[in-house]
Each structure stands twice: as structure tokens, then as C-alpha cells.
Amino acid sequence: MTSTVDLVNQSNGDLSEEKKTFIHLTFAEKFKYVREVITVEPLLTAYLVAAVICLPALLTLEYQKACLSNLGLNETVCQAIRESKHENYSDVNKEITILLSNIHSWQVPCQNIAPFILVLFLGSYSDRHQIRKPFMVLPLIGELFAVLGCILSVIFMKEWPVEIQGVLQTIVPSLFGGSTLVIMAIFSYIADSSTIEMRTLRVAVVQTVLNVALPVGQFLSGILFIHLDYIGVLSIAACLYTFGIVYGIFCIKETKKPKETSEKKNLLLDILDPTNALDTIKVLFKINTNPNITYFWTILSMFFIVTGVTSVGYTTLFAYFQNVFFWTGPDFSYYSTANTVIHLIGIVVFVPLFTKIFRISDVTILVFTYLDKIVSTVILGLAGSNVVIYIGCLVSIISNITIIALRSLATKVVSEDDLGKAQSLIGICEAVGIAALTPFFNTIFVNTLSKAPSTFIFCESVAYGICFLMALFFYFQNFVPEEKENRDQNTTENVKMDDIQI
Image (cartoon, rainbow, N blue to C red; front, side):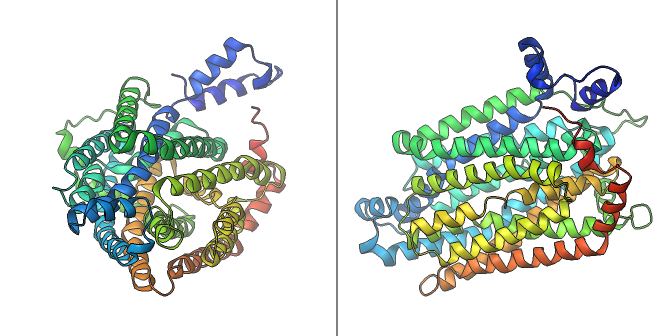
């Protein structure tokens, strides 16, 4: 399979020939081009769709299981809780919400310990050996085991408490690296297969695939859950994970030939070699060899905050909507679908607008997106109706571009030899951010649930405000003068992106 970098080199090989845009290619040429360019996207799509179609089912399952198993209440009460018809059972619903929030407070940190350790070693290992594919497939195997475990949890609805579901649903897949490892592997693979000037576009393409797969899965999730219930939805997810595993093993090719070392080591000893972790950590302190190390520290700090705050939305935000607005799992899936579609429109419209028309830097984009996050979370916190909730969703149209800009910056401030290690450090910061901030926001939510349940949302605004100040510091200290100088020399990456014809 031809890599993106090969395609770019081929297209630049003969500048005397007129470039053919994608629209002018024959059908056979278009098919061949798409087949060669598509690499990790099907695996990522299967992973994402499987995860999101389970979300309403698993969120609802937690409430029903806590009611039936942990509290031992009857079917009538628990069915009312499941359907969010808890006007007459508000005290019971709050008790369940607090129980689940406390479970999430220990569950989330525990599920991030294994990925933290794995990426610390595997990032350096994958760089040294130029191996990426196994680390994309391994997390899908873990998710498949998790789905099968959740099916058993449904079968033993009253016998197994909700804590067992929590372990099967999150702790088991984390032992295989979880989303932290698969994201590290995918973005390292993209960096290997693209030129520096194309990385922003390639990251945007993957982010677009992510934002197309998410709304499709989210929209279907509510419908599938209504018609197929727990086991039907989980079985579909198991099939998708199986497809992703098979595709990853047989269809994804390494972009670079794995490096062979003269010294043969046991595989496990090679992976767990302490020098792997040390090599990863050393990236943080390459002050003499990397003048952009301050940038990298800033980027890691932003990842810590943004990922930690964003993760709260999947559990605490649902609990907030369920208690205050009487939403069900499908209701939340429809909101998630609208939210994702709006963010997709923001990416499709504003990424080319920012980078190709206005030619503004990634840091400037961060400033705009953090402002957007602050305003949209304030609107959400003040919302008193479903209409205002969706207005806040609409205002957040460019907020997802934050991740694109951060990941693009991260690949540009480290050397190619450190790409895997840099992605490992990003994954570590994301894992630590989720582990640290989820209990923090859950504690705020539980303690303010009765009087001011939206307090945690305003705390999110404060967190984004900190990121906004960091982006401003980043902007005024170094990045703008360098970019102006480069632009005068016609060497900026944004100018090079103008040569890309699609």
C-alpha cells in the first residue's frame, strides 16, 4: 500500500507536467487514489462507531443495575429510573447518581494507570523499531473483551453489582492500552506517512473521519438501543471491533520497514526495557537540541486540561441532564449527534478558512477555539431549557478544532525520531488529566447537585480560561514573530498547503 508521503513525492516529481486535480481523474484513477490513501481510517471508524453506539446502553445500564442490584429496589421503580420518569423518585435518583459518581471517581483513575505505563514504554519501542500497527490493533482486542464482559453483566443483571460492570467496561480494555494507545499509534503512523507540510491536513482528515463516524454512531445508538436493547447493541459493537481487528492485521501496512538490531532481545524484555521509558521522558528535557521544548511543555499542559475536562462530559454531563432535564440515554445520544455534526461543520468550514484563506497559525487558532469553549460552556451552565442547551451546542462550532491545532503543533516541535515518544507523552498527559480532573469535577457535581448542579460546568469554563491564557502566552512570546519571518520567505506550512489539490 502506497503511503501518503510516496504519493506526495510522486506528485512533486515532475513539476513540468500540469497537475491533475481529483475531480479531473478518471473513475479508475480516483478509486486507485482513494484505495492507496486510505490507511487507518476504517480501523478508526470501526473503533469509534462501536464505542459510541454502546454509550446510551451502557449509561442506562449503570442506572438500572445500581437500582436493581446495589439498592435492591423493585422493577417498577427501576424502570421509572431507566426511562427518566423519576419525578416521584427524585431522592432515589439522586442516591443512584451519587453512587455512580463515586464509582466513576475511582474507576476513571484506575482505567488510566495501565495506558499510562504502556505508552511510556511502547512509544520509545515503536520509534526504535518503526512498528506502529500492533499498537493500533491491541486496544480493539481489549474493547472486544470489554463488550463481551458487559453482555455477561446484562445477563446477570441482579446478581452482579454495578462495580463489576465498571471493571469490565473500563478497567479490562485499559489493560490493552485503550484509546490512549490507539491514538498514539494512529497519529505516529500519520506522522510517518506524511510530509511535515501535509501533517495539518492529514490530522484534519483523520479528525474529519472521527467527526463523521461519531454522529453516525451516535444517531444510530439511540435508535438501536430502543429497538434492540442491551444485548443487541453490544453484539453489533462486538462485530465492529472484530472487523477492526481483522482489517488492522491484514490491510494496514507499516509505512517504514521495521528496524533490525544486531542484538537480539526477548520481546517482552525489549518492550519493558527501562531505557524506553527514559528515552520518552528525555524528550521533555532536550533543551539544547530542541529550541521548541517550551512549546512542547505548553502543548502537554493544554492536553492535560482539555482532555481531562472533555472526558467529564460523557458521564457527569449525562448525570446532570438526567437529573435536571429528565433526559434518557437516547435523548443524550441525540444531543451528542447534534453536537458532533456541528463540530464537523466547524472543522470542514473553518480549518481551510483559517489555514488556507487567512493563513493564521495553529496558536492563533487555539486562542479563538478556547474563547469559543469558554462562551459555549457558560451558555450551557446558564441553560434552563433544551433550546438553550442546543444554542450552546451551536455556539461551540469551532471548539473541536482545538485538538487539531494541538496535535498539529505537537508533530512540529519535536524531531522525527521523537514522534512516537512525543505521542506517548501526549497520551500520558491525557491519561493523567482524565484521572485527575474526573474525580475533581465529580466531587463538585455531587456536592452541588441539590442546590447548584451546573457549578461543575462553570468550573470547566475556568479551566478553558487557563488554557486561553497559556495560548496567549505562547502567541506573544515566540510563535508570531517566527511565523511572520517565515511568511516573508514564503516557507510557511500554510503556504505549502495551498499546493494541495483535492
